[in-house]
Image (cartoon, rainbow over all chains, first blue to last red; front, side):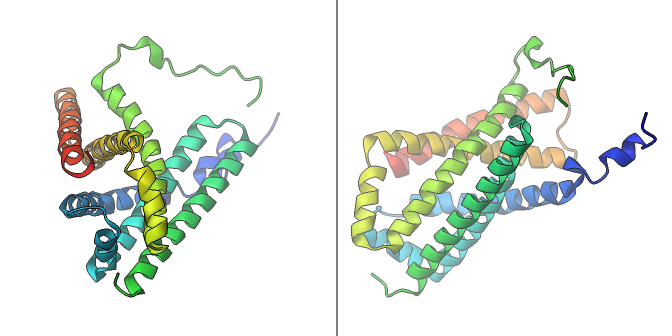
Length: 128
Length: 125
């Protein structure tokens, strides 16, 4: 028989770490995406076509560059948090769970940075 | 945990309702949108890589099969957006009574379908 209280046994384990931060950031990015998502949809609707010149000029415009970077940041973070919850809910093996969450974190970081770098390259490059 | 036979959530004994559909769909559409975000990153990188790269990516993105995918992602986008707004309302404690929760659920579906039809018609097809 253990003399350790049930509370002491779970403290510092599993979900007891950073849940409030996770919840808050998911909502914060959700509110940001409400604005940025609608902005992106409207901008795509307003593009006359999807030719190289048109889309380059669109991303090249300072206002769109900044909004797109914000959009990528919010999407990357929100998607990472969401995918993490799904992995934690359905992957039962501890090892597989850690590997999956790590892989997702690395993929989200790499793709977000690549997308932001692409936007900056277009923004600071010569206009097409 | 091994060997402990814990009771499972008995969700399959309930009659399916709009709230359950949307709860599942919120997750599924969210996951599909993560895949869509990957496509968006590829598209941006293609633009940055120059006209040739953009042309080869656009060859795939403008194909008929991919357009079906784009319409699907559009639906995921609007459903997740509208239902996300519903979730944010719940987070501040609003709209929890059964009548409102069902009405807001159906509103989300109607908004998603209409917005998808309009966006697809104007920007994809």
